[in-house]
Amino acid sequence: MAEQENKSDTEEWSRMWASASFVGVLIIIGVPLWWKTTEVFRVTLPYDQISSFDTDSHFITTELVVLANDERTASDVAARIERDFEKSDVIKLKITKQVLPEKLRNTLDTVAEEVEAVEEISSLVDLKKHNTFYVVQRTPLFREVWVGAERVAFFRDARVVSTLIQALTQWVYHPATLHGARSETGDRARRVRFPGGAGYHVVVSVVHPQPRREVHFDAAEAVEDYIGSFVDELSELHNFTLKSQWIYLLDFDFQPKKIMDNSSLGHHFGIRHERLHQLMTRLEERAATHVSQQPAINLALYIVPCDMAPVVIYDADNKKVNAPVQAFMSPKWGGVVLGAQECGDEPFAPNVPLVMGTFLAQLRNLIGITDKEPISGAHLDPLRSVSPRKWEVDSLLRVRTLEHITSAERSLKSLAKLLGEISNIVINEEVGASINTAVQNIRRAGALASAGRLRAAYGCARAAYVAAEAAFMEPSLLALLYFPDDQKYAIYIPLFLPIMFPVILSLKNLVLWFRGKSIKEKAE
Image 1: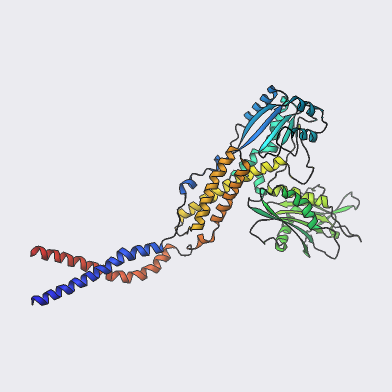
Image 2: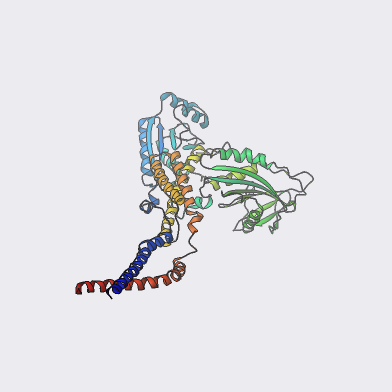
């Protein structure tokens, strides 16, 4: 009897320890393993640094050198400029002043042309230095202030400093545009120019709806001669790819209205401004611009049929647009020039300098070089070539630097916010590396910009922008968005619930058995 009882106890011990082993394996190994294999993978991210970003705190330091005939004039001009720019929180001027050498001062007073005077100044200072502008006194000026293509402005004397400050504010530095570059809403210039990026495709299209009439226009050569020379000066900002194409049989109903006038023909055809944007839609359908992830800047020459020539655009107020060439522009898309094809036996040949000059004017705005409003008492020397002014390149570098920094910060902040709201977003090693790279370059760019190292700051800012955009647009972020938590539980509960019933019952029996054993041992 005792032997049978001992055998029963042994079997009961074996059964209970088997149950305990099963429960232990499930709870100690199974549950953690299931938890680990079903969690969303996320690398460690610098959330504290991202949350501390302040887009309104970024500014750029730039150097301004005042060269005057005497110490008093240099001090007065420098003090007035410094006082006027003190209130700007987006651009800080580092002003230095010095007196012109007597020989150079005499030379500046005797040369006839300002361009010659600039050449004389280049013997004293380095005009190729980025982010540095020179304000030089030159007494025999026909205007109070003269600004040329180089990083030099001439002023007559200390009495014209208010005009000089106005020229620096509206032409050279333009703090309003810099404010727009770092704000969320932006100004008019930001609404027109293309977003920043590593590069652009510039596509010049010649649209010929009636190819039976011959047109003489070498588009490839014109693009290389004019636009190629222009973008070469901006190669440190963006990589440009130039293309040209011909588009035939793209007919568009302008709904022109014949209007009698006093011209040699006695009439012209008026086109309403609101009809022109529909032409862009037609051009977008036919133009081969979607060949790369880089944005395309479209410049189109539309050869208007001869039965509509000459054509004149009327604005929203029904007023004639008086311009040497009829053209219009669409922000962040491109521009169109209407080339009127005259009827006759001779082939139509567009005025290449006029057409390409219009394209360049549109391209300047689309890239981010703003038009300069006239200032009373100041003279802005007209462009003598297709290349942008040197200080315009510096201004564009400042705008793009701030725009890249703030855009990268907003992208990272938005991504961090999404990660907090949506738990199923996966952050793999590649995305984590992009985010960390963006954060590091944002810090470097801000420090370099505040130190006045503009070119290095722009390089870091662009790297931060590219890395932040790559992280934000990474397709792997969407990997588990189609599998929310409620669906996860709907799948796992039917799988694990049948297993958990015997486990819970075994756990209950184990607890009762251990209690019974302990009571029996105490009784004995």
